[in-house]
Length: 371
Image (cartoon, rainbow, N blue to C red):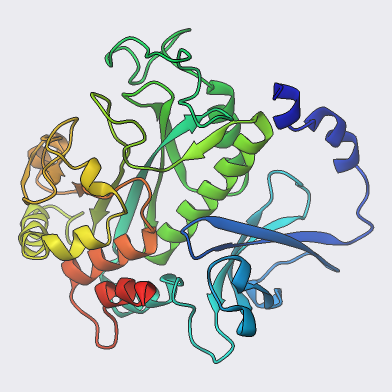
């Protein structure tokens, strides 16, 4: 298969993207399917959208996305947020939607609905999140991108935040993604090459409450679309390659309004104490195949034991050195895998740190998905 077969002909497409849309806009609806992947489809609207209330509900065939049975396949899309579309540009938009069943209940893979209940109950806590999304690039044959065919590159060492040929790969993909996210208004706070070659990271945040999950999902969608144009695959598997290579995580930085004030270390320590009592509950929601990554090696803690420490990247919870010195700020949960559903992770974090909410339980919400 030649490269020309898999790489989109964007130079030809460009002249069509310049055509006048005659007052219409294209809204690309995106949602999370029953496998934790992103699906999308576009529709034409007759006017520029300025409010979420102006967006119509829609539906799709849930039997084709592992979200419904064939005899009752319609799943409804309820818009919850929209963003400028960096691919079509102009007034065209990306619409993030929740999935709902026809009986008025949230689809069992819709974890956003439950998480939002918890955030709404704890608005006074002003809980902030920052998510560090690690991911790995693959070629069309599912090999690690740009690695020697049938072999391995030099051992880890020069690749983290690397610069130069042979140290970083596919920077064009990463730069395109960075610009596209900023265009769409995503709170993308940075990028860097990771420890394993052809592994990268982008950071989203700080975002408050439910906005964190929304922005990460849209940033993932944009990444998949950008990589599609370059003929590169994205994997969020937490251990894409066995052996002496780093896995991929989604480190979760957390801060409440009390933690951000002088003297906030007390609240950080209280939060860590609460997290220590719910380690197993959190691990359930922290991604599939995470046991392959959380081994106590390669800058991870053991999946079976909770730990914390200042500047310790081998602990479950890391307190940054600057936070320890200043006495307030945030903490980092290093346990979540790269393939997390951010609504589950931020939801249970708020639930544990800020308090349970009647009628909402993130572990039960996750287990509902399996039934």
